Amino acid sequence: MEHRRLRTITTLIQSQVMHGMRISALTLGTAQIGASYGIANTSGQPNRTESDLLLGRAIEAGVSCFDTAQLYGDSERVLGEFFADKNKPVLITKVKLNPEPGLTDVAVERMIRDSLESSLRLLRIPTTPALMLHNTDILRTHAKIVKKTMEALKSEGKIRLAGVSFVADVNDTLPPEWEAALDDVFETIQFPMNVLDQRMIHNGGLKQMSAAGKVIFVRSVYLQGLLFLPEERMPQQLRRAAPVIGQIRELAREERVSLEQLAVSFIRDLPEVNSLVIGAETAAQLENNAELINGPGLDSRTLAKLLEIPQLPESILNPVNWPKA
Image (cartoon, rainbow, N blue to C red; front, side, top):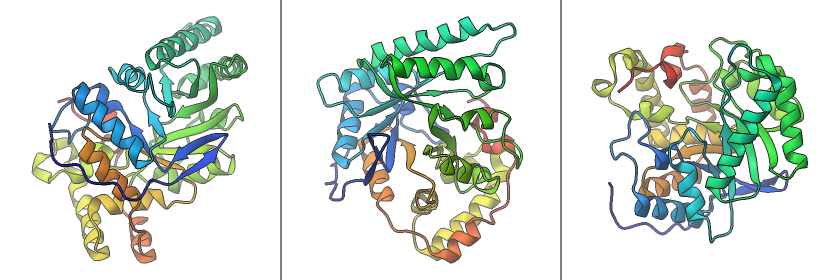
């Protein structure tokens, strides 16, 4: 694990109040503190001391939102223990539902409630600020009961907001469950987007969700670190991305910013985006991300060139399709 003198964070991350909650421009993604995560991860899962240091530095930097899920290993438990005797930030968690054949509405509601109760227990909170669907395909078959259950959980005080976490669609069209996610019951939306994967910009999905008043979280800003891997370290299946990443590196050089700054500024400055979900394995990485989120904007000519970056296939843009380590 990385150990070095920590920098003083002089500029706090900006935030805005939405739906009565303070949403910081940087949301800390916590998959890394629950498991060894990311194609460019060389340090592995941090131990408890390192996780506590990371979370403490996030609070010092002005981070008010933390993104977790049951699927993120020990993440919920680590967050719950760290914040047990502290002021509670916005803890966003997710429920994964498997739309198996013959799944009944009763079973769907029970799965949501059981998953939520487990998360609340691990997070040590009576109410979660936001509960998001971790998979959207359930909305294709059971949208009505999902929405009804989310409304009931709000009424019962178990959740404040409901949301949907999307995987960007393969094509230029929006996925079938998009219409269900536009329902007023869902106030928050999360999806992947980055300089390589701009599908939600070009298919109109980003603007549509913003116009519907959703709080928009964007994850995968670095595409799990693929953006920074040299071609020789990329799995063979992903090397088709290398020439496009080369173009992006050249634009960063022309702009006189780091590749990381270009990647963050491109997404951060989209007017529809409210918060970037970026993970970290160390406090030093968190400090770096805090500096990037407060970094400079991009020249309009650079932005225009980035919007013309060639489209890569789903096999590269969606880490689910990547070869297993």
